Each structure stands twice: as structure tokens, then as C-alpha cells.
Length: 96
Image (cartoon, rainbow, N blue to C red; front, side, top):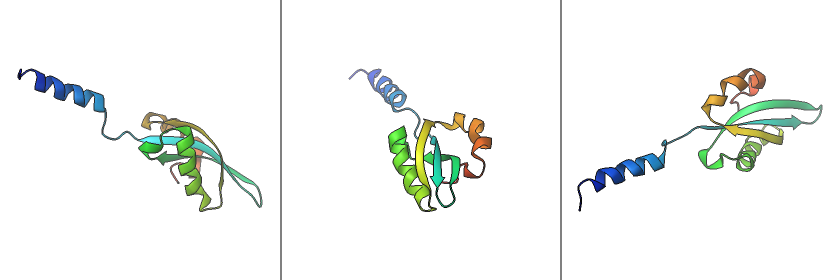
């Protein structure tokens, strides 16, 4: 076996694997009745649920414990989108 192939194969495997863990976040809107309350929040979701539909299921379960109903997941994003959403989410920034 050519000794140049193994290092090249390892380099290719590392490049294709990407980062070991990439954080995934979603911003969402929720409501609670009696009286009507609304909130905008940001939640970290598992890497496996890093799509709008999958994040919606994960977030809906979490917020339901406090009587909230998920209205919509607006977007999913990485750590680079956190700072721009922090003030808007207020108390619901990474709460769930």
C-alpha cells in the first residue's frame, strides 16, 4: 500500500466529518391562555433536531410543562445568531 494514501484518507475523513458538535438554536413564538400571554423565545435544540419541524416538536414538549403552546418556530441557527436575538427574547432567552 502506498504510504501517502493513509494520511490523505485520514485528512479527507476529518474534513468530511466537520465539527464534532455544532450548537443549534431556534427562535419561536408561544402563547398561554387565561389571560392571553405571548412570548418570543430562543431555545437550544439537539443537533438531531436542527430543522424547523424537528425543533418545533422538541420546543413544544419543553414549554408545555409551563402551560405554553407553541405557535411557530421562526428559524434555526448557530451560535452566531444568538447575540442579535438576546434582547428580543428577554426572560425567554435560553429558558427552555
